[in-house]
Length: 210
Image 1: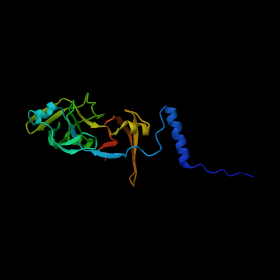
Image 2: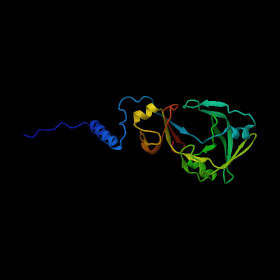
Image 3: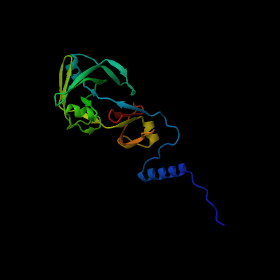
Image 4: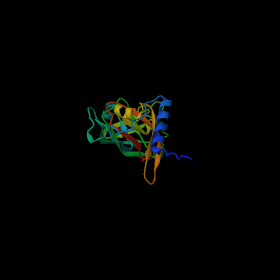
């Protein structure tokens, strides 16, 4: 007489497959318990990061950025000050928000549709990787600042504290997928992982992706 085997629950199969895949890759298996921190997804509109030198050229000697709204990442803020960006087609974007505090390089982050409207041919880059990227003219109330490079479309990415990275089994520079549920479900591939002790768990996508 044949004995009917009990079906294996799908969750068990998924766990075993997941475990085998991560072991084959030589990586720790991501945690299966409660995540250490909630996942926040934010849409990043066009903005710029500036050096203190650029701020003073645009707003006057000795000028300091004024925080208008504190962002999710500790110490980061949207400044009260805004700029005008001039594109190759002599089209402009006004009210380009500056994010502070000041950095060691100048960078403008646009969505693809922003770039098309302005006439920029921008590459998809990790923030800070601006070599070989197009430049542009910034206009402020006290002057102009010519950027030789630094205009990019920022890669979608996730900020992680080391605890979060350990939970998800990833390291800085790895790539992940972000699955969005609902009636119009979709998956974002190739999401760059950034890890730092100061980071809170947060995904950044641009306005086109959002």
